[in-house]
Amino acid sequence: MKRTIILLLTAVLTLAAYAQKPTDLNKAVVNVITYDASGNVLHNAYAFLLGTEGEVVAPYQAFKGAASADIINWQGQTAHALRIIGASSEYDLVRLTTDIPTKKLIGLEPAATHASKGQQLQLAYYSTVKKSLPENAEVTAADSYNEHYYYEINTPNEDRFIGCPLLDSEGHVVALVQKNVQKDATTACAIDVNFATALSVNTMSVFNADLNSILIPKQIPTTSEDDAFSYVYMVLHSVKDPTMVIPATDDFIAAYPNNIKIYAERATFNANRGEYALADADLQRGIELGGEGLSDLYHTQSILMYNKMRNEAAEVWPAWTLETALQAAEQAYATQPQPIYLLQQGQVLFTQQLYEKAYEKFNAVNNTDIASSQTFYFAANALERAGGEDATVVALLDSAVNRIAKPYNEEAAPYLLARAQHLDNGGQHRRAVQDYNEYEKIVGTLNLNAYFYYLRMQAEIGSRMYQQALDDATTAISRSTDNAEKADYLFERACLELQVGLLDESIASCEAVIALDANYAEAYKVCGVAYGEKKQKAKAAEYLKKAASLGAERTDELLQKYK
Image (cartoon, rainbow, N blue to C red):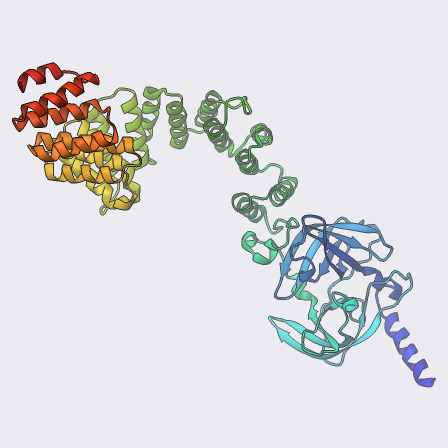
């Protein structure tokens, strides 16, 4: 009896030293229920309120995969998880904000010093009894790790204590209880509360697997506006789920409403998912705000309008047209004359098929410090469609190619292909063949289709490179995707074989065409000419008459020639 009285007296004296009333300490412990995206219960755990702003420290495993969470206080009142401040699977800790009312809120503060072996602590636990008191706990081991501490305690290794706080004599949190995973363990472990207070979201947290495993929105960095913007920017560009992106942008705008860049970034995110009304509202809001960055905002507006017109039917958000895209690009340039805005004007004008005006814009860009192979290529395309001279178009393509070092890489491929076709059209067949050969090296033979080999064959014929042309004709035939295409390339080979005097081969190619298409008039005609050149007049007449019956032209003249 005397021993019991002494123990009770010790407990009362210890509790009397707390800054808060002893009966309030358990009220800082809450019950946490987490749910998946479908609303199914994931975990039921215990946690505690840290500070007086409604922050909660809880076991990480209870939140892994959670899309929402309820926070239930000792009175049975329910609050909700709002933002995850930080998380660590290694330490099994998560820190979060809630919407719990902060008036008269009982929260705990971190202890200034760590605990030591043999120190007596108090364990606060979840209770709905108004005047319940914490239990005694003793530190049986204290080991330092990463400037903080892990503890072993004499508290039973039971679920009802996991996540609960251990308090010093001033009522401050020293640690929180964790499950002892050692086999047959009967007592629990504890982890230094400072592991939890050190958790935060930083600019690189968007790539943090532990945070990403929790589907509740994250708190944006609070260190500076630049840090917060960098984080939100990465969220916007790497996260597709609007339930994660929208809260981050909303939080940033609430904290920094005059940052014009966020309106352009969120408008882009919304436009890319087809939410044009939301995107337009953000753009208008940013334009009204004005100031530094306005020209970039107009540029973004033009790009979004332009992309929408390329990807959507005109009746989808009809307020955005190519005309409004051009106006926005012109506004950007009027606000700040940067060549990138001229480039955007050129792209819009090109899509409007106003090729001469587009060429003027691209040509102006090519006289600035952002000139590139691509801008010269754009100018060449525009000039070609505007009816410009082939020589000028080739000169522009020369500039595009010459800006790329040899050996050419994939960047040069479209420019080489375009130049090859223009060179061939302009009679520079050997240069064209050289460009086709370079293109083949870059792209690889396995990635080329029949039409490429047909184009190179034509340039090779112009260069009198007949064997190479015959080889390419054969390759084109082998890569044909259907019988009609195969027949056409067989016919091209037959014509070339006839041209170089390979009469039997030409006849064989024509017969192969006819086997695929019995009504291929020109194949009969070429076959008739080949027989005529072999002095086989009857066969020549037979094929030429068949060609005439199918509508081939100039057959009478040929029949007379081989009569």
